[in-house]
Image 1 (spheres, one colour):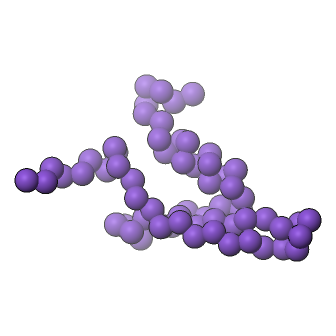
Image 2 (cartoon, rainbow, N blue to C red):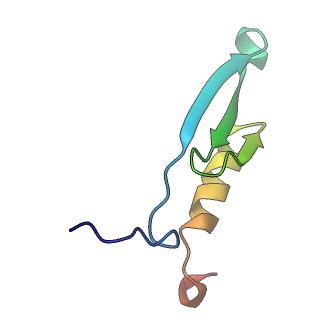
Length: 64
């Protein structure tokens, strides 16, 4: 028997990455989409993505 998934303990996203700009000015753009809800999160750079994921994984008692 499968147990229901607690959405506070499990996350799944479709990750899309694409590069914009030319050589020296190239930047990665990011789009995360929750396949369950369709909610999308866009990021202008990888640092924004990493910050989002870090914050998402923090439990209330471990938030800094």
